[in-house]
Image 1 (cartoon, rainbow, N blue to C red):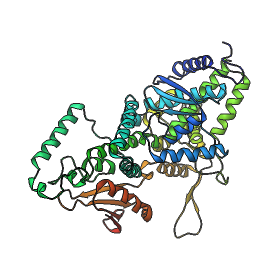
Image 2 (image 1 turned 135 degrees about the vertical axis):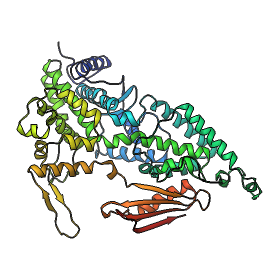
Image 3 (image 1 turned 120 degrees about the vertical axis):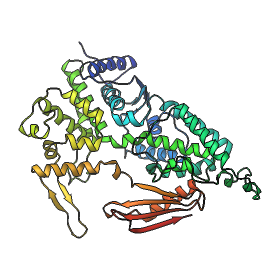
Image 4 (image 1 turned 120 degrees about the horizontal axis):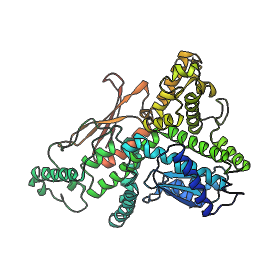
Length: 503
């Protein structure tokens, strides 16, 4: 077939040739299914700018993005931090940023990794299909950017930042963790009409006799007085949704700002649950494509060695005793699990048949992997596909840290029962309920004091950090407009072990 390229330099013709070769292998041999690809070649400064805005191509302005840009730029210029080879965006078309400083081999790697690995995962994984709108996210980002700019011109920068600051602080508590019904446009319009009718029927002209009530800029004018609002069901875990729909103080434009932050938080929610699986998928795909290109003699031995050097650095896993150890590298763990599944499908042993009876020896490695990438998130991926060989490879043990003991205790070792408990313990760490504390709104007195009551169940006796919790409650009180009460409750009982009141 001949070499796709020689040397380190690249041009757009070479990139097109490389893309077509990768596409032939990805779609024809690996059976991947992807969105159309849009490749953007950018500078290091543009990559830093993408970092600051969470990797999104369009983003509204906020001081925190500039702060992040300044921090990352200083670290990069001082040599304390490198930049990613690529950033990929879950959209249709799938947008992949690649650095112009990359060699042609690294561009080849980025195309295989992002344009086909991540792209396939975004398009097919059930969490992304359930929670994100790849077709509409770019249009929504354009709307959000324009809307925030219009609000800044009409209401002032300080007023806009006040709402965005509070909403950003609550992003971790601003997602729906479980699927909800998707409303059609007609149903949304009918619900809006029902809300207008409710406001008209509960209107009391006596409120117009209060001096100053209803004047422009008076927040009390937005506090609809009456009974409970339709659609308010408690407990409610999504605090941004609660404020957006039912806050007695927020004005319409402020509610839309809260909604923008909430929609973006929900957009990123699947990515928080699939970091290891997503990177394991992309790393497996780029390894398979680059290996196949070398086998077909489309890249030279030197190019393949350059690829292997980068690949090995990406999947490196420091030992527990190494000062650089900070947990399990998602690239390393994901890739190891995928390779182990591939081996068990093609060359199983007795241990594999005991642990993976559903796919061991089925001779369909990529079909098995595509099914895993479609149906599982990190927590369930580990429960289903982490086997003893990977546990031994990573030298995993379960260290029990008990409050009444001065030292760690090794609770599980490498035996049949130990493997299962280690796997279960590791899967629990990837459970999304551990990423952020589950705080629920349990009461909202909309017709009286308007006090908002929150409840936090202290799982395993773990209480909230008092100072951080108070700062977060102040942000929630900014959006709610009235007192907010948070009770920490002992798990499994109604015993209150702590309480904070703001407002």
